[in-house]
Image (tube, rainbow, N blue to C red; front, side, top):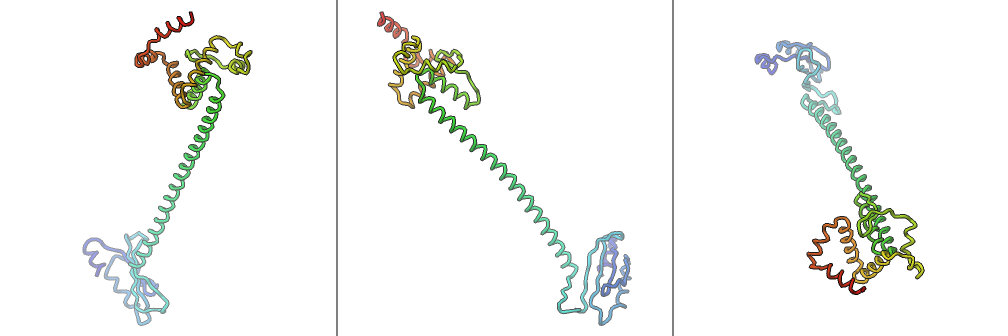
Length: 258
């Protein structure tokens, strides 16, 4: 009835009919030939299979199995709908496995990238800690304000990725030479006599500053002085803000010396 109905609607189907796996109706689009299979059906017939093709030349088909007699209690024959459902389930199962594998590969890739970033962060933290320890050691061994400022300026520039030359309080660029370090190591009165008046003045100022500030305050003072060395235009602004009169102080100092 279905084959006849499809033909009347202009959607004629090609089909074959098997009786016990024996083809009794070859591929045709004439629904009237369907009934020809009945002459091969008897009491011993166990099943009839009808294959409905998509087109005349197509090898794809929909199978309909009609069970007339159970050949064995252990035999489980699937209907056409059940066969299609089983195939669909297997296809979906395969697609799900592929999706899970792709997701797993993506997770592995993201995990590898995260581990690399973590390793880079740990390396940077170790490098930074090493710089801090070295800076502390050099600051503890510094003999005067000028040397401390040079150390702070050098390490600040290095941490920012901008290597700067050593500078004095006046901002003049100098090249630090190993032999110059001896001028700051005063172990005897004889060594102190070999210092220039300018070096003695720096030492005096450094001792005075260190005696008036805590270590934390001292680091801030050095940072402010370093900022002045980089941009002298700020000196007048700070002097005005603090209401200082350096000219009077200079006059008093000169009068005291006289």
